[in-house]
Picture: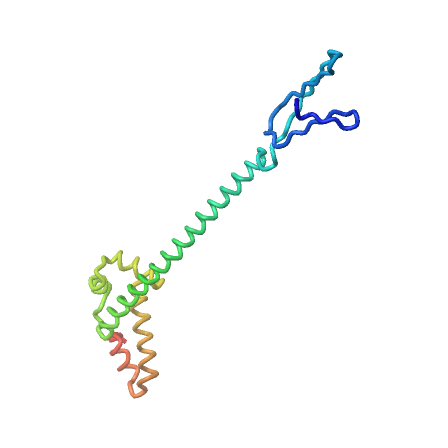
Length: 171
């Protein structure tokens, strides 16, 4: 080998950047016929080792999971905002329908459902979703709120007058 260097009667050879793997170093003492071989194993760099690849996979999987989680949160937030707007619109529409029939003591669930363009079951589901109440409770709560408001703002009205104005005609 041309790379051998002699230093104080010792022979030295240096290799750099050898790829990982198994090598055999064969040496022969010139003139004596003595031969010696040494098996040399060069380990890969830490970043090329099996545990480093496992770490890469784990970090990659963690990053993908984190990305999916963040995307799901974004979609959930966006959906909740859209549902909130839809619920607000539905709540506003339901409140308007009831307010339009506030003094009508004959206003019932069938008419309420018809004006909301829903079936009775659909109305029950929708009102339950947007207010947490049954349709009857929803109508009653709006009537009670309006009655309380009238009693506060129009003290000249009697309780009987207010009850008639908000649709409670049967006492």
